[in-house]
Length: 606
Figure (cartoon, rainbow, N blue to C red):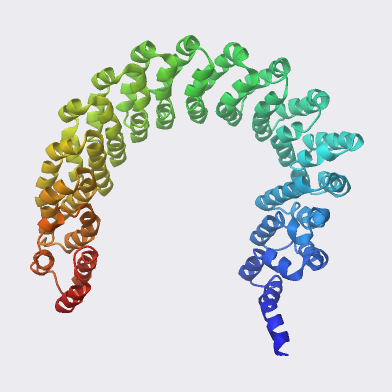
């Protein structure tokens, strides 16, 4: 009996999981569904096929969250039912889930069916999977027909010729379905289905489906057909692509629905790749210009975001003649979001147009956007300045754009100031040490006293990166003295920033300089009247002391004097402040103190 109890005991939690599948509490059912693989391993492959899967097939009226978890779990269930030979037993519950009203459940069910169908043997696909697709495609409720559209590309490659013709016929029926949702699904999945169809039927049947979908009276169907343009264009021969796809793209760029035009603008680069460079230059450049000047701001936003990619396809001469005038107009667009979208990509045009065109045409636009009233516009320009520097050189960049950059360093929006700080090390490496000291050095110190913490933190990290760029000697001469002066700032938050800067600079300047110039300041800060300063001093000691190598450590005060000077004589004892004292003591023994001495000091202090 004892042995039997030991055998049955591990199965007891499994029994609970199985019972929870029928529980009234949705959370218990959800937890159990998410552990279906555990239940299946406990039941074994045979019982899973005969008991668990039929139970799940009947349990399709549950809460949507439970059904979604079930659809997800079943997608990876083939190993639990005996391998690919028995994969077909998983189709009935997923077929049932493909008919529910909730879209996310249907989408996940289709995804799982595709995973299973891709692993099934060809004869099993013909026997089980293709009949499932046909049943869904002829379903009375539209949800089944919507789901069916996403399964054709899995079923078609394994089908014999007769069934392939039947599948194409079913898909044609779905493309003409009375419900717009079904036609939308057919348009969305047409590209995937087309990738599996033979070339002769691609030019006849599939292109017929495509043309009819592009002329649908529902704009939601037409905009999904735009995605099919790029997918079909890659499958067709160049001549067929120009003859069949290009007219559709041009027509869509003038569609009465702004959503369709938006989709064209968003997909334009992929569409240009599909039709090739010459048709792009002759047919799509005018279409793109129309989109850049569209009445709807959303369309202009999408078109502006593709301006650099589009200029990369056409020649510099075409870009200057047709695209640049539109870019100038967009730089003063009434919508701030259009200007922001343009600013995020316009810097990339400089390498494409060359130095002369950049200086004459683009620099005035850059300056205009740098002074834009909307902070995101300025931010997007600042973050891409290095692309312009590669083209026009640092001298011209500093003369034309640096005054605007210095002005932005004091921008009222802190994110703009932050972007400037993050760009400073790159700018410094390009400007050189002399130019930097003359023009930007004072700014770097000014940011240590900013009202926003993120700016002060970035400023401290900026000083470290500058010290790494220009070397320890430069840092000791130009940074360290100015940082040390700020330790006497009356506001404790600024003194805290100085301590952070010291901890970041210490590894860069080396052990000797750390001991001589910075460590005394840190020790002295332990007498600060603000507890947070003292607490951070204690934490800093742990990061700084390893920097001080064995040749410098003997110059430090003896450990007992050091601790008393920095902690005890600062009257920093009692109450919550004991945490800081303990932190400092536990930091130092690792390198300085004997264990017995630490115990004695802890007893004395606490």
